[in-house]
Length: 86
Image (cartoon, rainbow, N blue to C red; front, side, top):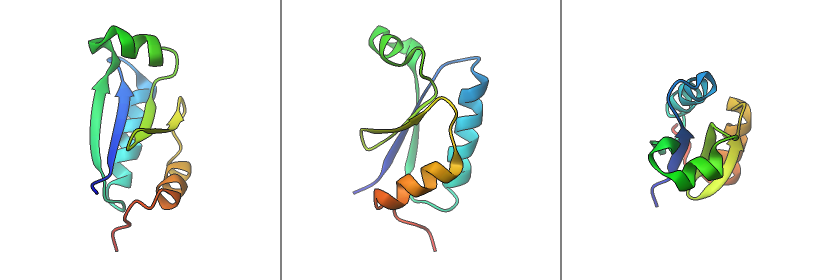
């Protein structure tokens, strides 16, 4: 199964930009597809994540929101059995 990471974000969000950079760095070591989702595209997403963004989700499971931490995500990827590139 291919691991999918969704980054819920919106325009003009400095924390979202930082989170995207962290995920791009993690892609050098971990095998996953990154999908960026702008919450402004759907009212439901704005209502759900409006105060939480950025939100990082792996295969439907929310991993972290707000301040995104590279080490925390690496540990989460390990526990969720995301394939590490050797």
